[in-house]
Length: 339
Image (tube, rainbow, N blue to C red; front, top):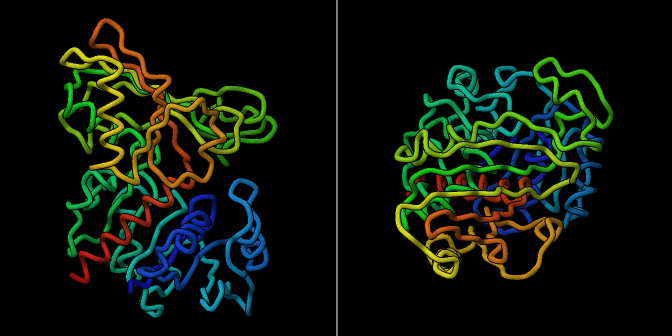
């Protein structure tokens, strides 16, 4: 069983821990340490109670500076930088880096220098990491020799299964992906200062706010044949969780709405079973809260114009779906190492 640690215990870090216990990953992975700047009582409280995902499914207690999840003891630390923590003394096999602070090998190397043999990043990374993995699409590229791997982004995990399915069926010439993303913790509740982006000075509660996105780079990294062919934009909306991608593609071959939906339904039961969903019911975003899949296609919103312009609505829980994919990658990597 792989011994893992979590660095950064925010929305993704806590979702990862919860999903580990809720969805069966605990049979393969054991969290032995968490590094988070906050104090242990606040960490315990935010583990037990969550506005978005409800109460934690197991008893949560504290002892000294540890979280107790059932019979498991998780040692907690409060170090500002990874080099300050003796990871090797904890016999950690892998760190799940959930702080969002590292995207290039140079910074992530600090973990390896501190005794971490493997690092899995919860954000898109630069090209100099060993691999960027979207589970279900290219997890076979992970090797036992890799030391720094990225689990891409929630939007990349949402889009790649869809692009892969449509490309295999009808080809893709070009397209545009508009992400409609729930508010995030880099936005203020009321107007406040942001040193990097004036739009992010505005209240998350009151506006639809355009933001920058690196989704085009993520697509090109995983599907280089589509580099420069998929334009991407993003806006944040005043919802707590669950996002969507409004995807428009120009296909190489003529298709019908029925054919596109049929192919996506088939992918949901075969290649991307458990990762890609399909529905014809009249849904709202809240219906997909706590949905562990990477993407759910709303078949009622599929349109085909003039045979080759395809429009799709792709739902995804940007917290829970991604946390489960990160654990899928960690488990697969562990299996490769053990094998």
